[in-house]
Image (tube, rainbow, N blue to C red; front, side):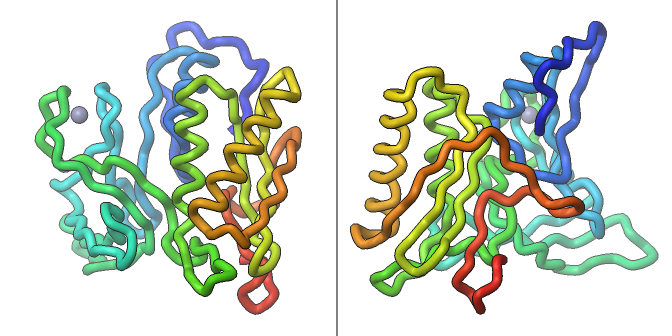
Length: 235
Ligand SMILES: [Zn+2]
C-alpha cells in the first residue's frame, strides 16, 4: 500500500480498501495522505462483500445477504474461523463455505446506529499461520500484527513488516519504519525480541532487519508471515 508523495485529492469522499488486510494505522495514513474517509471492504470472490465499515469505523456484516457463522479455534480465545452462506444467490449458493479466515467478533453496539453484527478484526487465513516452536508448540502468529498495531498507535511509524520462520528456532523479521535515529530502532528490536521470547519461548531466536520496502511477488497477495519449515517450501 504505497501512495507516498501523492498530493491530497480535493473533493475525494471515500477511499475503499479491499483484497488485502489493512491495519487501522494504514487506513489513517491513507486518509491523511489523500484526504477523505477510508472504508474497508471485506469479502471473497465467491460471496462478494461480507462486511463493510460504517462512518463510525466499525466493520458491519452484511447480514441481509450472507449468514456468517463463527467457529471457535482451539487455543485462541476470542478468535473464530468463519463459514459463510449465501442468502441471495439463486444460481449457485455457497452453503457453510469455509474461507479459512480468522476473525474476532464484537457484541458492542455501534454508535452509527446500525444493528448489523460487527467484525472487530480480520486476521486473514488461518492455514499456514502457525509458528512451530523449539518446545513443540504451534502458536498462531497473530501476536505480531497486534504488537505492530500497538506500536503504531503509540506513534512509532511502522509502515510494513514481514515474519519468516527460517527453521525451528529462527525467525526473520523485516520492518519498514520511518525512524530517524538508530536508538529508536534498537529499542524496537529489543521489544520485538521480547515478544518473540514471550510468545514462542526462550529458545526461539529472531533476527530483525530494517528494509526500505516489502514487495509481494507479482500476482501474489502480501502476507505478513511465511514459513520455510513445512516441507522445505516457503508457504
Ligand atoms: Zn456502525
